[in-house]
Image 1 (cartoon, rainbow, N blue to C red):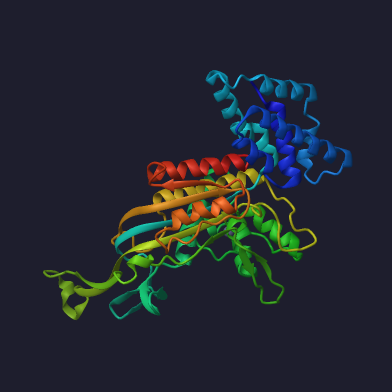
Image 2 (image 1 turned 120 degrees about the horizontal axis):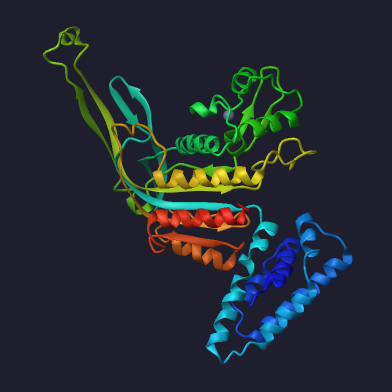
Length: 426
Ligand SMILES: [Zn+2]
C-alpha cells in the first residue's frame, strides 16, 4: 500500500489552512471507515480551495498540480478494502495512516521552519563557570536574587550563570560549524569576538568594506556574510545616528539553582597558591602568590530556544521584511547542528581549563514544533509532566524528546535535532 497522493492532499491542506486537524484525526482513527470519511472530507476541502484559486502558499500550489486524482481514488479504495479482522492488514493500514504526515513531500513542501525548545536540569559540582569581579586576589562567582515561594516569598542570593555566557558559547560553536559547512563568518565572529557590527569601524574590520547606507542593504549584507549575526542578531549604532537592529533567533537566560536546590546551593572560596620556593623570584613577593576562587555547587536550570523563522530572512526594514538571503536550509541546518554540538559538549562557561565542573544532566526535554512552543520552566520539579499537559492543550505538531526516559542524553539530543532538521527540509 502506498498513500503518496493522499499525503500530498493533506500536505496542501496543512499549508493552506494552517492547521493539523486531519493529521491529528487520522493519527488516532479507530476504523478504516472513519479514515475514509475523514479523507473524503479533506478532499472536499481541497476542492473548495482549488475553486477559489487563491493559494497563500506558493509551494502548496505547485504540489496541487502534482496530485494524481485517479491514484487518490485508488488509494481510498485500498483503505476501504482492508479487512480489519485480519491483523495482517489492519496493522499496516494504521501505521501507514500514522505515517502520512511524515512522508517526504509533506515535510519538504509544507513545513520549512521549526521551533526547538530545550529545558533541563543539570548538576554542576565545583564550578566557576561565571565569575564577576575580582577584588584583589579574590575572584567572585556571579550571584543573583531569586524568589522562593514558601509560606511567604523569601528572596535568596544564589550562584548563577548568565545568559550572555551561554550565548557566547553557542555563537562560538555556530561560527565553527558555519565555517565547516562552507557558510561565511565575519573576521571578528570567527575569532570569538562578538562585537557584531557595533559601529562603522567594527563593520569595516569585520567585512573589509564600507557599511551600506540603506538599512535593508545593511542588514542583508551582514546576514549574507556572517552566519553568527544572521542567527544571533546584531545592533548597529553608528556615531552619526541611524541604528539597524536584528533580533537574535535564539533565546537563553540565567541558569539558577532549581527550586529544591535553592536553600542547599553553596558558594565557597577556595584557597590556591602559586608556589615558587627555591627560585630567585620569591624575593619581592613576585613568585609566591595566594588567591581565592569562589566555587559553587548546585543543580541548575537550563533554557534555550531556537526559532528558525527569520534565519536567512531580513527583518528590519518593514517594507522588505522577509526577503530571503542565501540558502535558508543550509543556514538552518548549521544552526541546528551547532545546537546539537553545543548541548552534547556543554560548550560554554569560563575557567574550564582548571575549574572544569563535575557535571551530570539530571533531566532534559527538547520540544520540536512547527510554531512557537516552549517547554515549561525547569525551576519546578514537575516540568516534564507540565510539558506533557501543555502539549495536550496546545500542540503545533509538537514532539517531545525526554531524557532519561527516551534513552541516553546524546541519543535524545541527536534524535530531537534530526527531527528538527527533517522538518526544516534539511
Ligand atoms: Zn560576525
